[in-house]
Image 1: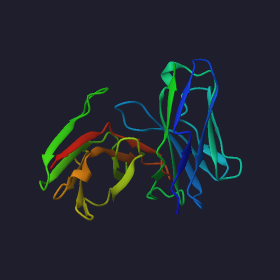
Image 2: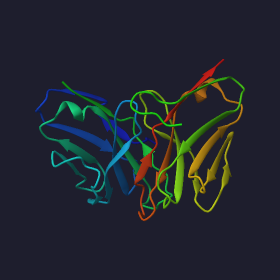
Image 3: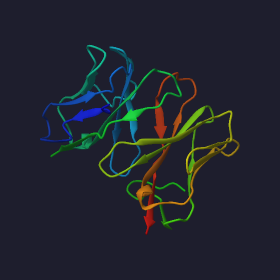
Length: 115
Length: 114
C-alpha cells in the first residue's frame, strides 16, 4: 500500500504570499502530525490531529499558520503572509492510533522556499 | 556530542565495521525513545524504539541502549553497509502526552565507505 503522500514536493513562493501544503496519510490512520525541519536540524512538532480535530496545535509558530483535516483523512497546512524564515521542509506523519508507542510513518515532505 | 546549526556530528566508518551513534536527551520525564534514519530527500524512517522501563532492545543488525541515569541513548549498527549512510535522529516522546508528539535531537551524519 501507499505510504504518506505529500504534495507538492517543492514549493517556491514570494514573501507575503499564501501557500497550502497537502498531506494524504496512510489509509485508516486516525492520527496525523505536521512537523517542520529546518536545514541541519531535526524535525520540530507543529500540530497533531486525532480524527478531524486539532488535539494539540502548540507547535504552530504564530497565527499565520493553520491546519485543517475536515474529513479525518487528508490534511492541509496553510501559511499566510509567508516570510523567508518559513523556508523549511514540512513533514507530515500518520499513525494507526494515537498511542504513545505507535509508529509514526513520515512522508517525504514539502520543501518550501520563500524568496 | 551535540552541535549547533549546520554542523551536525559526523561518523565515518568502513563497510563491515560496527557503528555507534550517541544521543543525549533532555527530558527526564520522557518514557519512550525512537531512532530514525533519514536519507536525502526523504522523511524520517523508523528504525527501532525502546520504552523507559528497558535498558536494551535488539532488532535486525541494530541495538538501542538506554541509560536513564545520565539521559543517554545509543544506536549500535552491526556490520554497517553503504546503504546505512544517512542522517540518524534520536527522538523522545515527552512524558505526559499520550500521542506521538516527539522531540528530535539534531542528528548524526553516518557515512559508510565501501
